[in-house]
Length: 358
Image (cartoon, rainbow, N blue to C red):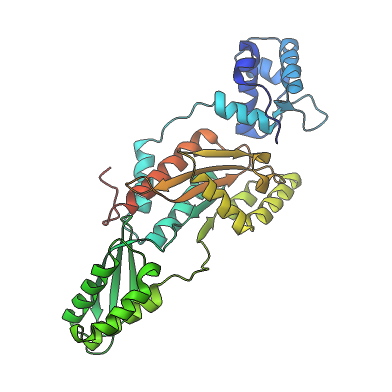
């Protein structure tokens, strides 16, 4: 169990002010902060000697530590947790920032939207963006076949979540528009409110029993679709990770490079990352892990900011997150992850997949 240190209420006004200024300086620069620097640039109005006394007490309580032999201090992971929970002032995204997120995510197929979300999180946060895609064996609302050419059609699968998935498929020669409509209606009636896995065998059996009601082309479309759409029982969850290069770019010293190397190794543990994001789905909103609070990133000492995305009924579909150094810009990253999760959930509840009217 990681050391948590005191609560914010345990700090007097002087210690709270000095602690806030040290953490804010560390988050901006990554450098240790000394008493002389705080006396000259801080807002406490205290002498260097008075500041040293408070810094010593904060260090003894486990909120600060000296990374080297110098007099400078930086926050421990427990100190960062205290700051994030009790002192961090989280703003909101500007209308321009919200619009930018909306534009980048809108009017795309589901997979492209999730991929773009991972890139977006990575680029704006300066870390690696994570997106856990929803399990695709979802209940369906409607199936429709749209002709594209003489030998190709688009199968439009509308899920109960509101997500829309388009899948290209070849069609038998001579397939008529009426055969496409018949196949879509046949599947929609039997799949409504059920998943492909639940109904595949039963529908195939019905196709054989009602073959007189379907022409050969419609029957072939149904059988072909069910054969290719049904998810594999042991199919892996889809985890999208973008922005590993940003982590390397931010490593300014050999010590940081080694930490990033460890972090990249940790990020290769896909099953553990998926478990982490699944855990995030149980939270009502943004969840933050700092350093050793999560065993997966205890060696690299990284921070993770996560949030679930939900459909219109509040059901959790997946989760997103940002991984970076412990001094990421929490005030910026937290509302960005929160809004992006809301935007994805909103998009998945709209067949038009557009949130520009928000």
